Length: 174
Ligand code: RP5
Image (cartoon, rainbow, N blue to C red; front, side):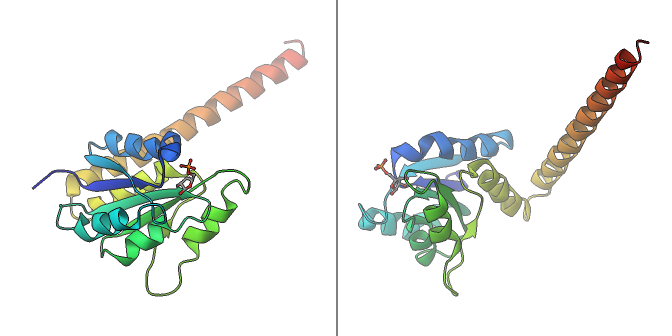
């Protein structure tokens, strides 16, 4: 069976500049992915085929991004038991508020885990967290990643304190 664990689905190639950030997050953790353009309204048959075959193909998580009346993640979720993470894509004229509401407001029964508008990197991280539930090595890498985030905060805090101290000394003519 294929080692591809995450399917990254987007409604159009115009979503790629955002959705490639999901792939970047997965690459950071060495998770194999595939990308697919499909559309719930322009090509519903393809969308249904992909969702229905995803689990048998070995996928564990689907990340789906779409803009406008963004029903792609919900339609995919309705046809697979795999977890689906939705990425609302910002497009004109409503700048993603439309896609956010379309994706996050799934009626009871068919959940879609929704990230922020254009939040494809976080969608990738959430997929990694799901995969890590059954992979201790991956969990350890996630833990190191979180520690690296905390270390960066400490670096920024130290740099800010030093800068403020320098400014104060300069102000006093020291
Ligand atoms: C949605 O329509 C796609 O997800 C995309 O965000 C939006 C616009 O698609 P294009 O007109 O750029 O193909 O289905």
